[in-house]
Image (cartoon, rainbow, N blue to C red; front, side, top):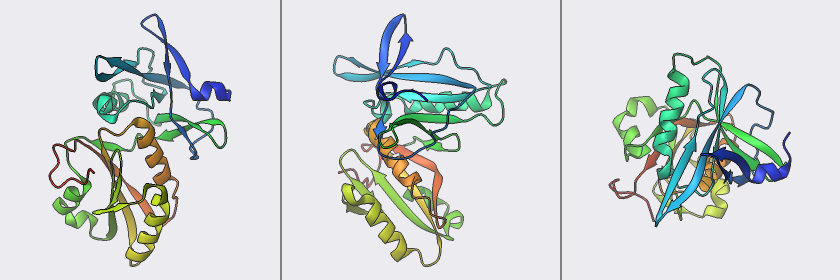
Length: 237
């Protein structure tokens, strides 16, 4: 297993120059076993004038391997989400793709002091400036048997359905609300992320939700990444 100094700053070579990717550091457990037979994708943080940009190195990817995505924690989702979707699609649908190969986000687990991973090949990122509540209204028969909860993660706030909640008490409030509202139904969590959310925060929320790991709670595979200026009645403050 790699040493902790490598966990905090992963280094690669890009365009003949030495660049670094500062991966997220999170106090949340993920998959921590060594992933053999893998390729790595690097998404670097770059600033041009007043704009934050992403630089991507995926030249050494092999379709028949697992893919590990090393994404700089300072990047907003809007800088790389479209590219991420395209790369992920290519991995799954290339003529050389192989069954059983997965996509993983990498981060440093500050508790175990290990490099950790989140498998996300089953996630579908919806980037049409929609929110999950519209998806539920559009397809009521699909969700009628669930206790549906919409979670909206903005840069400075979290909304549980239409109620703004305390970020520091997110997990406690969520579990209490599920206990109150479930009525013996399976709870289905629908996740919405503002596209100005930093990757560090996005991965923190995703790991928090994934680590609930209760049999009566599921997370919908559709996750919505939205532009707050394009969504009507958006909880974005």
